[in-house]
Image (tube, rainbow, N blue to C red; front, side, top):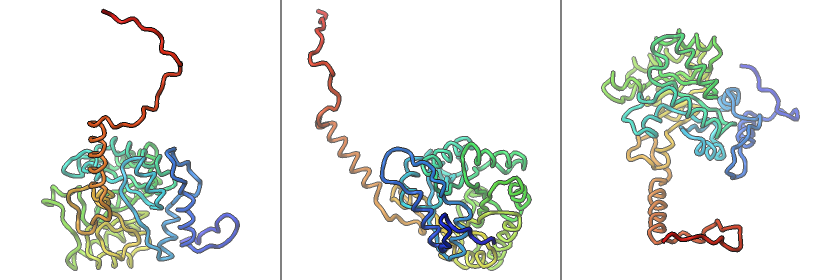
Amino acid sequence: MKSAQAPPGGTNSSPKKQLQCAIAMSMTPYESKPVPPTGHGITLQTLRRAVRDAEPFACLTCYDATTARWLERAGVPLLLVGDTAAEMILGEPGTIHAPLDFMLLLTAAVKRGAPNTFVMGDMPFGSYQCDDAEAIGNAMRFLTEGRADAVKLEVDGDWTPLVAKLARAGVPVVAHLGSRPQCAKQEGGYRSAGRTPEALQAIVDDAIAMEAAGASMILLEAVPNEVSTAVVEATTVPVIGCGAGTACHGQIVVTQDLLGLTDWQPAFAQPIAAMGTALVDAATTWRRKVSEGNLGTHPYQMKCSQMPSTSVRK
């Protein structure tokens, strides 16, 4: 791995300080206008330095520009525009119901809201499984139309040739291993993975193969901590965990789960806020104010001091 370049000014700050600097420079005062790119956004190189310096980094899902803006201000360095948008935004029962064009629109929106954050686009079901050429074209759309910094694919070792082609085409790939929600119908539901020695070794072998094929990062979902530990030890790329234990370099959960906006959350993504309750309270207050006519002073007044005379039809 190449050594990190010195930041502007010529000082050789630590990777930890460089990550903190990149996050801090992406944050702006709380204002409603879009955050302009600073030129100091989070990149793959930033995340690699964090890994080298053993600094864990937080990741969250995001599907809109407004939430993205606030998450960037919070200093979250990586946002995933996940196919969980099918469930969180569209109300669908599973992740396979996220159309490609829909995902591209959401990814672009998130990048506009958080231009200095590393944004990962999730390639939805059917966008890369049919044909390699089509998969490469769709992945490129995520980088161009969606302004994504990388794309994520749910894969195993059999997908190594496609990952290699994407990498040769200049597409940063995040290889999603372990539990694969897009295969839930085939597997009879959402299931954890890697819970036997044989299954653990298979995931490790797949991770090694993905890195060799050119994958920029690995995401592990719903696996024991022993699996993520083995993958981290066997590879050199950043490893993000989604219910994969503390050995991973990064940790990601669905933001709606974290905020308490969902009726059910997986055990690894318990709420740390009660935004659902706060939303109900705010909406209830607004409903009461409307019913009581308690809307305060109307902000718009006629410019003329005298109203023009109007005829009244009798």
